Length: 76
Image (cartoon, rainbow, N blue to C red; front, side, top):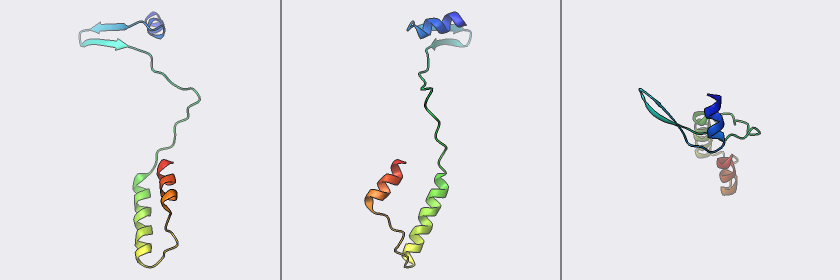
């Protein structure tokens, strides 16, 4: 297998055939410095947003965000 991995790393096209079919072997580019972000809890965020909207309808206008603040939160 090391031989095939080395060929794929050098840019060669490696095709492996078996009874189940043919498969192309190619390296996956990874960034060692890249750290996985924790998953967002979208359900919790939506529920919090609905609660804030309910508070707004009940008269609490202090939790409103500007357009720029909302866009910043969506980018994070």
